[in-house]
Length: 313
Length: 251
Image (cartoon, rainbow over all chains, first blue to last red; front, side):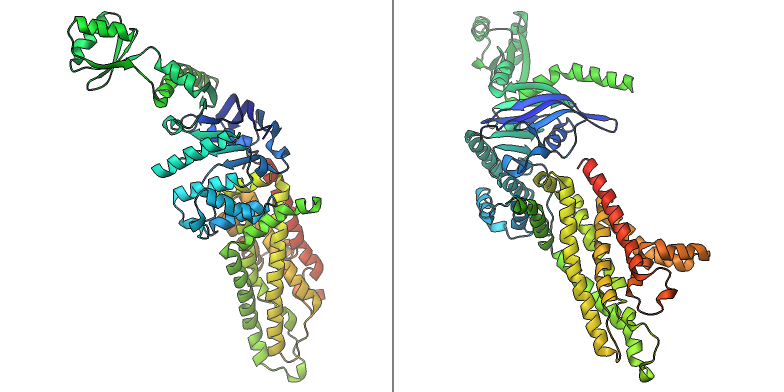
């Protein structure tokens, strides 16, 4: 697993009048789970298809272990992919779907049974795929990706349709696979799905890179110097803190988030003014909040380019 | 080891084809339709005993009439080989496993051709055995027999080519049935004898079945082997065009 990298360089892809991917560059390192995040239609699936040699880039390169996909002699041994879990012939048995894939690479049938066990699908393996639930299809798709024991994995929305138990299972699986030194790229349109799973994030919008950052850095930046506090006297506290230079946001009935004042100063001010309060502490942003903040910063940028697009048309 | 490596996509396509129940249903339909229509065609001749074996019927051609019906099953089998991949989205899995696209198409064509040739041989031999049992002075001939099996095989390849070009099962079946059945029907409807003659010679379907004739060969619009050659040219040409499109288009 020496050269387990995914590399996208200046990738550009147009479908008719839509620019799906617009000069995207990023790298996925071995041993990490990288979340590939953006709203629906941001260009995630197009990027994954370009990496798999299914769509030819208009410009730039999409490389697996330093090579374009079509140059791989035994692709399933180098990269495992799950693009669309629904892409199964309904009349073919789950196990037979894995068998033809194994035959395409001369892999022994033992591998088929190994991966079926790994994803917990042994009991349904001899049923026709048409009767599978979405969760079972996802498991079969992941089994197919793992068939060649590849050092690189590309998974498009693998959490979609899984029940809470399934989501826990896939998180543990991805963590374990990354710990074995594999490079894993997991796309999602929901940032919360990647919480506790991804080490690194590549955020895109409208086919362009918005952020390429580690999860811890992003959370740290988003948490900022914000203070969270609970108070019964919300209005009173808001007026007081705003007067002293803080920016105050209300998150629910009795919780405020204060920016621009250190926690010690907040405590001091509220105590002096005899405003009742409880639970003052540093605010820890969720990944979802951090993402919202990122995309809000880019909102002006994206709407500006949108106008530019309109003009050039 | 190298040869073995090259055969892997072939092995994958064979597994794919044989693990679908529709494949076996269509092969059963091929044999049943060919045999049933063949039996219906020879029944009047068998009942009407020719005095001294002097009847002028081309009994060999008659006994193979069922091929005209059985080809529909071959067409659908050929279409499904590629159409189902586009319909279900498995084409992406296929191309991720074998990125060299011409190799995917060539493997599918090979497996399909071998399987329809086997099914076609079964259907044609069954028809001959039936005719041999029912007709008094029946003598099977090699060219119509071999030609009918080749015809069924080529129709399956035509179906594969159409599905690869259209990337759609129902569209390819409609177009394929049109080529096989509507064009020969047009031949009888067209008022111009010149165009009638041209269609009989150059449309794949009336032309290909001239391979079954054993009598009055001089009266045929096109000679037996050139007739089958017309179908072969359509199948090969469309398969080549399909290959070019398959290589260049995004999946």
